[in-house]
Length: 376
Image 1: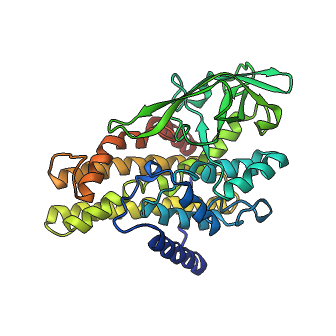
Image 2: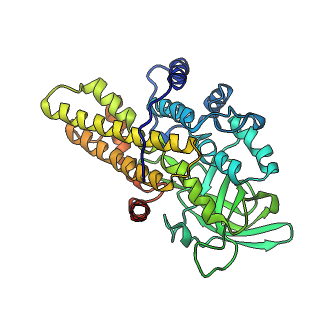
Image 3: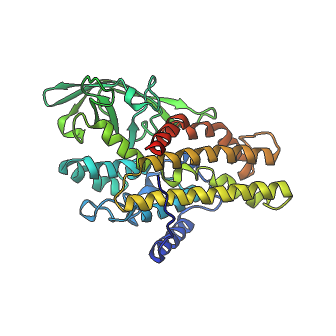
């Protein structure tokens, strides 16, 4: 496991400046930052980003994308997350589905989906976790049975972000019995409006709606919507998780909280507060460098699944630590209806931060992946 330090180039820094200017123009005064994936679902904002070439950035120009590198995408995403921009509509399609289609999809799938993703018009969710499987994806029980011209899917997926507003989701399911539980898995692209698909909300304690349970009851999926090779789902999904687990969204969900704490409360009012903010800043920069190293590794053609798992582990654990530390430093009761931005964001973070170490793989699973990688 190697994380190589990597500076940004002059061109990458110029890109950062362009994104900052765009956000200064587009986000309204007093904008309330979203918490990473907990931001608003704003199709208009996604389309404006797409017009700049900042959605589906790594999609080749022949499919409507910018042909950008993973590090260029890192720069854009970092700025969007630091601003708490409303990125939820295009997020999963851009981050995860598009690279998977480029690697494993058919020419027909790429030609149909990728231009729509790059335009900010086609939105995806993920169909991985299940009630009895959680982060153990090899334990999925959703099945797809062969029928003339396609597959019939039955099962239940949970923690499916945005399924109530998105167009499709990629479902990991079992297409054949196998002695090794990692075999016999496949990925299917399922229309979330198809007959037999039922979406039910899983609400946060504050009543906000991001997650869902999705029940698939005899849902027919045509052969042309099989993603990759039948039976190769495990290999495909583990490659896909390098994109999901290593990005800035795994440590910047709480950046708006930190920024407004410093703006409203001041970082230097006493020694304890100065030390707390200093520790947060040092750890944030360290994790950021790890994440950037993974992006540069992806740019060079590597598949750093173990490194990505480690970034996700330390990043989401850090996010929860920041919430608790700032809550302690603030020394006040949690009030979701508070007028101040810091107080309102703190209440939102306290109610939603437990999910940070669940989505994308639990801490225990990720540490198991990292331990196996270190043992090789």
